[in-house]
Length: 380
Image (cartoon, rainbow, N blue to C red; front, side, top):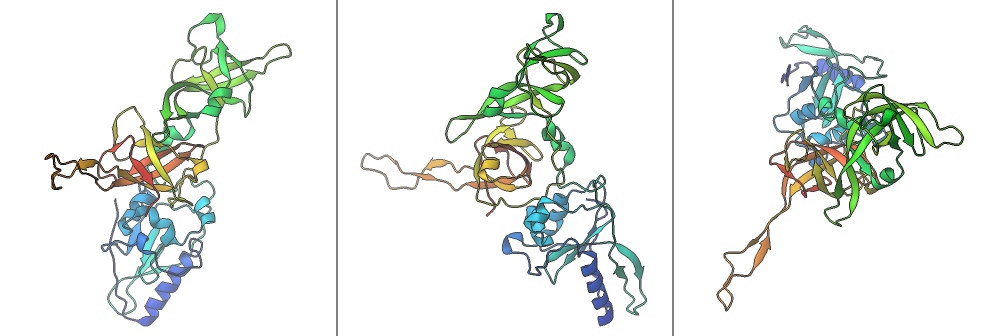
C-alpha cells in the first residue's frame, strides 16, 4: 500500500474539534446509514488501525479494509451500508480520504481541502467539506478485489450447467467441410436461438461432481471465441448462419453456443451470505490440486442456495481422523480408538460469479494451500 499515513492531531480548542467532527459527518453523509452503533465484535477494528488512508491508484477495497479491520470483508458493516446499498455500491476514487471515526466505530469518506495551524496549538488541523461528484460509470473507481485476476471469468462461459448443455445450439457444418474454423469463417448452427446477435462458442470439458452427492451438477467449459449471427434459418431450414468474430481456440462441428451474457457488476461489495451456506470446493481453475492467494476455485453452491455476488465464505481444511495413541489398550493389546481433529480455517473466499448450483470464488488471505473438497462456510 502506498501513501499510507497515520495521523492523530490533538486539537487544543473545543471549537476546532467540533468543526472537524461536523465536517466529517457532512463529507460522509451519502455513504452512511442512520445507525450510529459501533461495529459488532465480528467486525472489530485492528489494534493498530490508522486514523486515515489516502486512496491511491492500485488500491483495492479489500486491501484498504485490511488496514483497519481484523476481517476485511466486514467493511460494509462499518460503513453502515444496508442491503440496498450493498447491491448498488458507492464508488471510491483515488485521492479521497478514508477516515477512522473511533468514537462512532465507523469508516467515513472525505476530502482534505486545506491544512492550517491558525488555532494557536501549533499542530496542523485538516478542514473538510462535502463534495459532489458524478459517479455514473465509475471508470476510475478502485475495485473491491484485483480486477485483472477475475476478468476472464466474468464473461467467458467457463461453467456450463446441465440444463444449458442440453439445449445449447451447436455447430453442425463448416464451409468446404473444414475440420476447424477461425476468425471471419462461417459456421452453420442448428438449435433454438435466444438472446442478442452475439454468441460464445464453448466445448464441454470435465464434469464437476458434487463431493457430497456424487452427482454431476455442471461441466467445465473450454471457451473458444465469439460468433455473430449473419442470417437466421429461413423457412424450410433449421440452420442459422454465423460468422466467427474472434477465436481464442479453433472451433468446429459439435461445439456449442450460448448468448453473450451482460457484463456483471465489477465493483463488488463484500458481505456475509443472507442465509447460512455450507459448500465444498469442486475444482481449482487450471486443473491443479492446490490453490493459493488470488487463485480461482469453484464450489458446489450457487444462486439457488442463497449465494450472490460479493458474498464471502471462510475456507477450512477438513480435520483428519487419527488414531488416539494415548488411549488405553484393548484386551488384545491394540489401540482402536480414533478421533477427528477440528477443521482448520485457512482463508476467505470472495464470490464474484454465481450460477444456479455452482459459484466462482477468489481466494483471499490464505494461510495454507486450498484443496479440492475443502469446506467453504458462512463467516462465524
